[in-house]
Image (tube, rainbow, N blue to C red; front, side, top):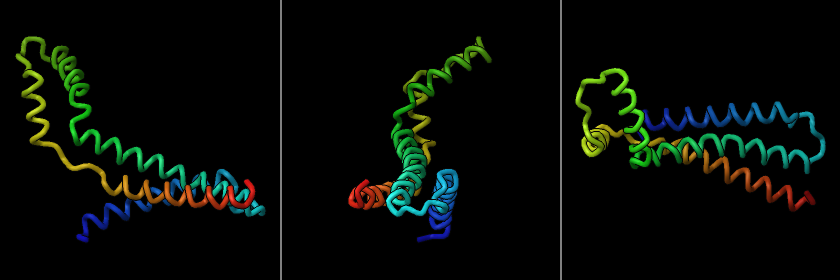
Amino acid sequence: MNRKRAGQYAAAVILAAAVFAAGAITQNLFQEEDIQKKLGILSDCFLFPAVLLGGMGGLSWAASEGTFDMLQYGFYMVFQRLLHPHKAIEGFYEYKVSREESRDGWLKHFLIIGLICLFASVICLLFYTASGG
């Protein structure tokens, strides 16, 4: 794994840990004494970064496939008409081709870390329900 990719995964893990810690502190995980309630809180705390990072990764994948090109083109047309009313504007096909040429990759590391957090949340939920929750 190269340094850039390792840095991206490290940043995603740090963000997930920060969201997890914020959830743990706000839900008083460390003051709770009942193990069943702790497992429920742990499940919730892992779910927060799973939804946040997994959602960001999923949306970035959808955007990298061109899902939102028509919406972007619509806003581009409106603002170009307002800012430059007499300038000829390219058609949608030309816009889409130029977007495909300059399209970057998507945030795989966010999706992977989000899925790992979702897996941890499900494991905590299974232990929570097995303990009578």
